[in-house]
Amino acid sequence: MKTAEAVTRAVEKGATHIGFIFFPKSPRNIEPDLAGRLADPVRGRVKVVAVTVDADNDDLDEIVDLLKPDILQLHGSESPDRVLTVKALYGLPVIKAFAIREASDLEKIDPYVGIVDRFLFDAKPPKGSELPGGNGVSFDWSLMQSLDEGVNYMLSGGLNKDNVAEALAVTRAPGLDVSSGVESAPGVKDLGMIDAFFDAVRDASRRT
Ligand SMILES: O=C(O)c1ccccc1N[C@@H]1O[C@H](COP(=O)(O)O)[C@@H](O)[C@H]1O
Image 1 (cartoon, protein in one colour):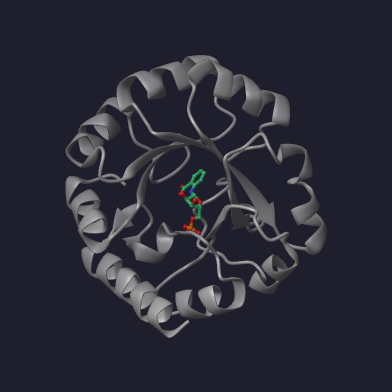
Image 2: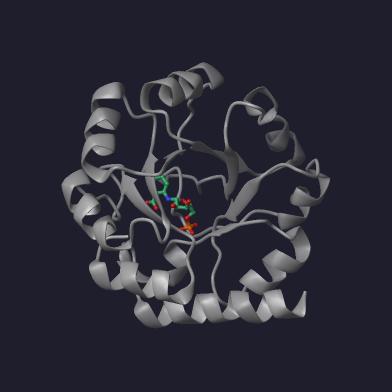
């Protein structure tokens, strides 16, 4: 999220979480103080998520201080030890992102079970991309069918209004995360696309 209009619309449409990206190479990168001001009007109604990529303690200190997130989303190659350290430092729940292309990628979650609060499964970035997420690409959702029941996760990666029904039908994911699928250009959230995405999710949920 980068604008008050997008925050308001997502919350009105039923978002349970809103995310702010702290990764300078991203077109969605935002300063922590602005993110905090955007989050203020909706605190308590949705979970505020800080998305970081292998951030050091100084950066996390500033983000936690100024944004006051409810959840930290770690979208880099943070080890289980690093996750434990982050949790101890800030006392916040952690969503850990994993990049999935093949079945063996799912085995990488094993050392994190019992440590992270929720998993997020995203596609591997395309060759040449500087972004570990937010690339608008999907992975083979049928891989989720081999996941142990009870693994609490969000499905992400290239979701949009046209494919979210199939994504739900294939995975029955307990949570969905969308970014570029509701953008008219990189980093530019589109209110009509936000509406259409939530309407598609609602229609699909009614049918399944
Ligand atoms: O969106 C970004 O620029 C980004 C940068 C660094 C880490 C994560 C990022 N985005 C996250 O990636 C997933 C999937 O996004 P998309 O729907 O495929 O565009 C989502 O969690 C974003 O928050």
